[in-house]
Length: 284
Image: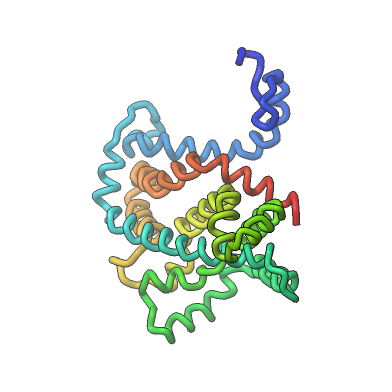
């Protein structure tokens, strides 16, 4: 690649760098406020609070991260959050995979009506279900537990939609050949179809992890014990205490500690994430 050419990720062909920048200018313009906030937060995390209060951004230090790690119980917060998000994801992968397979491949009456009912869930804001969900959790005796955080999300309309669209793109001949060989529906699903929808699975996994990693309102309603807090609750309490002392560098360092695992995950699965959503509307 020369200094005046770029390679298109879609075609693999070289094209002028100026045209690539022009085509991506609207996206860069829309992303610029978020990039500025992210860059300032990262810079503030490495800048002493005293320098920040004086408007100086010169010297860099890791002191903010050390103080943030010691001020909040990040090991416990990470452990609770990982247990909640990863445990929920394992259950979701089973439910959305089986639901997507049934909606895409099983020829049963009313299949499309069930699919549209599942899609209708996407138009219902989660906050509207907080009260009935909490009443159910309370009656089950699961209040103030990580299990209560996960129960309302074991089934996902977004995941069922993504997997259905992925399964619809699998050639019908593969399924017919597997049936001729005597494969059961479960064997067709796990041995034939699942390897072909890995981009959709990776995209859903990333969406689920990001959403539940950052979720605040439902954990705030359910969790009362400090030792059962997840990162969103722990960081909110940490930020309130640091804000009273105008420890902006400390708050920025805490925000980086909370977001870092998600950033790493997105960088690892970015290609699969984009590819799955690009393909989800090609066939339905």
